[in-house]
Amino acid sequence: MLSHRTFASVTRHLGRLFGHLSRDLGIDLGTANTLVHVKGRGIMLREPSVVAVDSSTGEVLSVGEDAKRMVGRTPTQIRAVQPLRDGVIADFDTTEAMLQHFIDKVLTHRFWEHPRVVIGVPSGITEVERRAVEEAARRAGAWDALVIDEPMAAAIGAGLPVAEPVGSMVVDVGGGTTEVAVISLGGICTERSVRVAGEEMDEAIATYVRHELNLYIGETTAEQIKINIGSAFPLPEEQEMMIRGKDLVSGLPKSIPLTSQQVREAIREPLGVIVELVKETLDETPPELAADVMNRGIVLAGGVALLRGLDQLISAETDVPVYVAEDPLTAVVIGTAHYLEELDGFPMRR
Image (cartoon, rainbow, N blue to C red):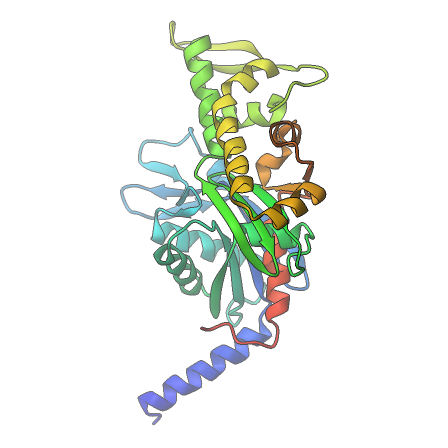
């Protein structure tokens, strides 16, 4: 019969063996969406970071796309929740269940695969929050896990020369946080973050429609408005769409037109916070690195980088060229995958 010490040693060796045989995962664990990159296979999953839970039993009913469709449409005993708020874990157990569901979905031989996992997280979170993310991944089935700051992952994924002695600035605007960082020689030299991003814009749109147009709309409708006609800068041809909601006077369903100018006015405040964050970061950047940024420009990543005119707005306010990453939605997860490649041959446990 094996002693406890011998059994533990065998378990560790088997874990390392299966860890190396498994396909490593890079994960962009976002407030709004989660993306998973599988080594050798590419991005295998893009789903909302939403979990539907039965309030009476605590049972997880659905995750991702299926749960997202339930938002605003569930019976009272079913809650569609986002386990991450502002880029950090608000509900540990639900986050673990969500991660396990996503890992199960991308791995075909789950019974023996225990991958190494690198997860992109906001640079402003605490050490306790970082450990919580790593522990959630391990409990969800990872052999080992570590985190990487999202601005660094976004810069790597966007193809910036992060290892060279030259300053590169990245602005990562996601669902819950906006992060601005200047990177040089493989490290973050200057960084600032604020918990204002895409979700605050959705809330601002819903508030504007409620106060100015007496129409109540849900967060899903507000997000669609932002995607369809939202802009940060005047458009060559302004747009309009019909929106549906509940009339606050009669209580009945109602449809009204909404213009891109109105949406721009609605999101003016959160956009102003993001622009000020970029300015503050530039102001705190050492002169040599700031000169590099002036010459090379600023790169936008994250889902909100797709908001029409955001690059023009930031450029107009800072007098610095601004470019949108080739695929801003996947920059972070691609960066985690490249980071994992750099770790090949080295143990992850610290």
